Image 1 (cartoon, rainbow, N blue to C red):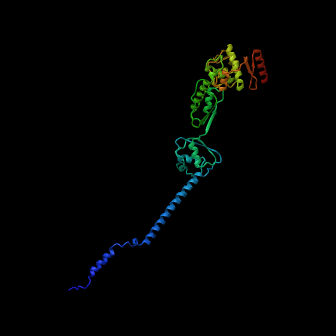
Image 2: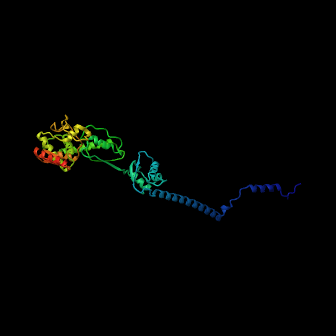
Image 3: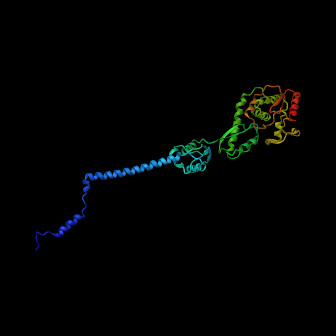
Length: 360
């Protein structure tokens, strides 16, 4: 018979086991000092992580800025050609290869950080000595490309002008051949690398049309030339006869007098054009040349030739439209760059004799 006062050992063991398996009470939650210490440690660790991240960001940004502002190695201006379609990374590599920027310059990131809305331009650029990435980016953004120019001397034939244009290596392509003379205005034309040769020629044509359209209405009255085309023909002869600006109105005056009297112009440059065409002559004229049967032979045929013999400049056109008032009918070279003018054939022959004596 069981003793009612005896404990049930099995029940006690089960109670103990159950107590052991139960979760421990969160004593620390009920301990404010312990909570504060844990929170303080967590905040301290977070602050350290934020500080490290900020240090890395600031340090990396500072290093990037330093690399973008380091002066390049060039000690003299450097010309670089950026082709259309070149990527930003390729531009940076090209600037390094040309010695504009130091090696390993983070040019791409400089563009991303500092370029804003302005794209980099293609073209030919000059970078100053010591340029850094930011200054190079600004130069490429503004599109301030290298300016080239070609100066066309007055009095060249069209063939000679086109050869001059084709010799410009900064121009793209070759000029399309043009027949005839007097369509192109000689002067200095500016362009950028990559412009087409035909574009320059087109600008010369427009300049000639605009010049004659501007000058023709203000011409002197009573001239024996009745069209702008005739003015260009006579201006081309004046251009080939003298290179002295001050002398052109006087030369034009002689030819105007001859045209009024129906005399032959008897000008050697027209014979040179009749014999050599646009290519000219590399030898002196002969008496045989003076007998060539050509409408450009102004010794045989009075009046103006059928077309210009060269491309005259503005000064010669103005001289023809405003010739000097003179009674002279003849002129001959003096040997010092100018001409001696005469009213009579006898006076002219004396001037010719003096010229020949000076050449002996």
